[in-house]
Image (cartoon, rainbow, N blue to C red; front, side, top):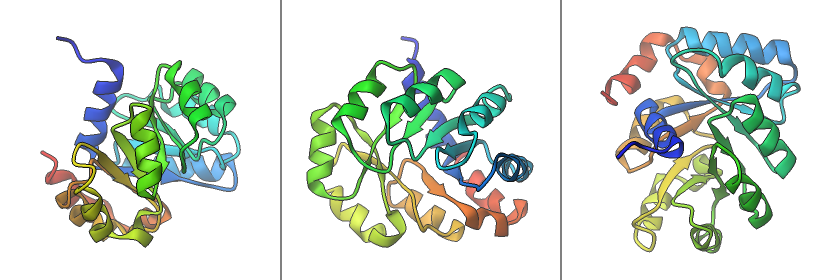
Length: 201
């Protein structure tokens, strides 16, 4: 049976292992940052909606072969629709909103809501979600994610927020589907990133 678009995107995120979260004060700065990330071998990029011109940037980079582009910090239905129309394959929210989840369900994109508490996870699960963003992941920590696996064994998390690139392997080994890392990727060389990429083969 052929995989759906959402299943393909989930598989691509898992294969990437690391999602580069791009947040910038202007379009030019974001554009430059994305090109630097691509040069380092990054294959999954999340462009946040706090970045001016996010839709335009998504539309530009979504056309690039071998690059999975999504939208981040999506908090409103209009943003989700704009992102999907621009070509975003996945849409990430920092929290959970039933209204946003309902809007995202009508879009041709993989919606990943954010959670941090068991109650939020239960609400997301009640809406049919099984892949969730754990935010802020760096603050809650790997042990917290492991503890959540007890009551929620069928849920896969994408921890994001305050995570150092050097800890990505630890999160993946602990069961994370993928890991979101932000500005700290600027300080990591392409060579250092290869270790993370190699373990996904």
